[in-house]
Length: 231
Ligand SMILES: [Zn+2]
Image 1: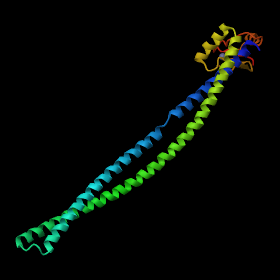
Image 2 (image 1 turned 90 degrees about the vertical axis):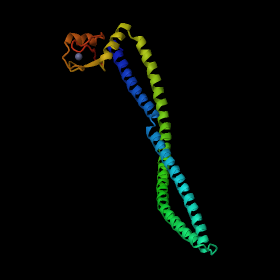
Image 3 (image 1 turned 60 degrees about the vertical axis):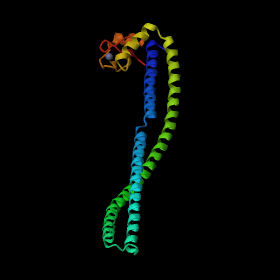
Image 4 (image 1 turned 30 degrees about the vertical axis):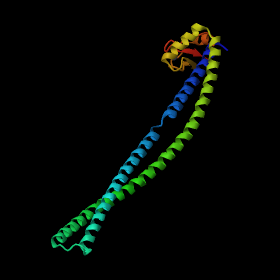
């Protein structure tokens, strides 16, 4: 294999390495991306908190209502039980009974409101819990697939790295340096001559240069500096 051909092969390996490295980076990024899952979990926990608050308010309201109902029951039994004869006391009891009745009716509507709010929130909690479970399952499956992909790519990268090192050892270090320098600014450091033109910049390559390259010498395009290869 001539020197330009060796460099061309090295370049193919380097391009493969680049692609595989990108694949690896992408797999790693996707492996660590759990934003949707975290968002679903935090939504679920905030809805659970809302539900707990509503249930507490509901309980408090129920107790207060029971308390008032008990008081009303006692007042009514005093009022209608026949044990109270004093007219003034009876009037007071009537007033108290009426007051309790209105307090009870003022409590009932908000309690119904709380109950229906709690029901709606409970339904939302169920839906969010289902969504979270589904996302978690999908995430776990994806972790598995991506984990496999990652180790496959890492194996390929390891192999390519070894092949590259073996090939690079055979190439003169000055030529290797030249190749590396060009690769810093251009994706392709080695390009073919096709129909007499440099495939990097499409300028016509003089016949003398073309012949030198053909003989296996390192020839750079006079226009773009890339190394010319016939292979
Ligand atoms: Zn060129």
